[in-house]
Image (cartoon, rainbow over all chains, first blue to last red; front, side):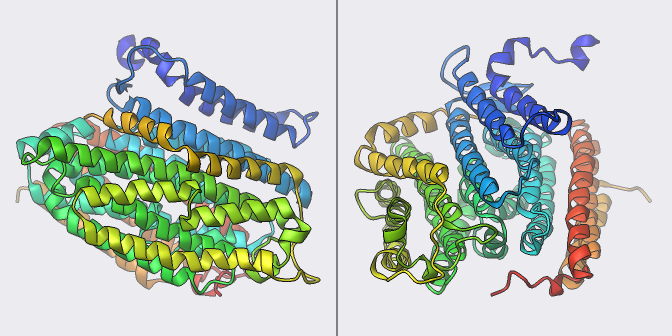
Length: 505
Length: 101
C-alpha cells in the first residue's frame, strides 16, 4: 500500500536533485520574504542566486551513464538534453536576477515576489525540457507561464505592465486550451499520455490517424504561441514592450528556449509518421515568421518593440531548423543513415542557436535595463544618441549584441546561423536557406541603425545616460562570451551534437 | 438510446467552439476568461470520454490536474484584472490601449 502511495524515488534522487533544489529554493525565498523581518530586501537576490548556483552544482551529481533515464514512472526523461537546457535556464535566471536587482536598486522599488516567481518559472521550464509525458508537458508549460504572467503584469501602479500581463494571460490561456485539446485528442489516439505510448501507436499505425493529425496540429498551435510564430505572434510586441526590461529579456531567452526544447522533442517524436502532414505547414510557418518579423522590425522606433519583432524573426530561423529536422528526407527508411545524420546536424545547430541567441539577447536587454533612469525605461532608439561618449562600455556591449543578432562575424550569431543554414542546405532545402539568408540581410539594416545612432549622433539633453555598474558588468561578460564563442564555436557545437544524439523514445 | 464515445466528442466539440466563438466575439475581459474556462471544460470532457473508452486512468488524472491549473490561471487573471480596474474603471479589452503605438 505504501509503495503505491509513495513511488520508490529513493534511487532517483540524484537525478531529481536539481528540480527539488529549485522547487524548495522557491518556497524558501517566498517564506524568508514573508517571515524574516530582519532580512533586507536585496538579500533575497543573493539567496536566489545561491539557490540557482546550488541547482547548477546539483546537476553534476548523477548516477549511471550519459543517456536519457526515465524517472517518476516515465513522466520525465533526464539526460544530457535536459541538463543542457537546465544550465541555459539557470544561466538566464542568474543574469535576470542581477539585471532585475540593479533596476530595483535604481528605482528604489522592490518586487520581493519577483524572486520566488522567477525560480518557479525556471522549475516549469526544467520540467518542460525533460518531459516525456503529455501530463508533464502540460504541468511544465503552465508552471512556467503562470509565473511569467505575474512577472510581466505584477509591477504595482504601472498600467502598461498590468495590461501587458493581462493580454499575455488572456491569449496564453486561449492558446493553452488549444494545446490541451490537442493533447486530449492525442490521448484518444494513443490510449496513453506517455510519449512512448504515442510513438508506439504511431509505429504500429493503430488508432485513428485523423485524431493524431488534428491533435498534433492543435498542440503545435499551443507551442507556436509560446515561441511566437506568425500567425500566433500578435501578443509579442505589446507584451515585450509593456513588461519591464529584465522580464522581457527573460521571456525572449529562457521562455523561448523552453518552448523550443519541447517543440524539438515533440517534432522528433511525431516525425516518423507525420512528416508528410507537418512538413509543408511548418515550412510555411517558418518562412512567414522570418519574413513578417524582419519586415515589421524595420519600422520600429522603440528598441524593445524592435527586439520583440527581431525575436519573432529569430523564432523563424529556429523553425527552419525544426523543418529540416522533420523534412521527409531525414529519418525516413529510404536513406536512413544519411537522413539521420542530417537530422542530427539540424538538431545540434538548433541547440547551439538557442544558446547563442540567449547570450546576445540577454546582453542587449541588460543594457536597455541599465541605461534608463528612475522610473523611465530606455526604450526610444533616437534617445540612444551619443551613448558611445557618455557610456562607452554600455554602447560597446549593445553594439556587439546587435552585430551578433544581425549575424556578422566574428560574433557567435554568425556561427549559429552558419551551422543552421548549412544543415538546411545539407538536407537539400536550398530555397529555404536562400530565404533565410535574404532575411538576415534585411535584418542588418535595423540592427545597424541602433549602432549608428549610438556612435554617429551627438548626445542631446534627453539622451539616456544611466549606468548601473553591476548590470553593465554582467552584460559585458555576456558580450565577451558572444565574441569568444564566435571565435571558438567548435567544442560547443560538437557537445551539442552529442547531446542531441541522446534523445530517445 | 445508447451513449457512445462519439456523443461525448460531439458535446465537447460544441462546448469548445462555443467558448472559442465567445472569446473572439465578446470584449468583456471577465466573459473572455469564462470562455477560456468553457474551452477547458470541453477538454475535460474529451479526456474523461477517452479514459473510459480506453479503460485507462491517465485521462482522469489529467482532468484533475486541469482543474487545479485552470483555477490558478483564473485567480491570476482576476488579480491582474482588479489592478487594471482600479486604475482604468473598465474591463473592456478594447479600452486597454496604453500599449498601442
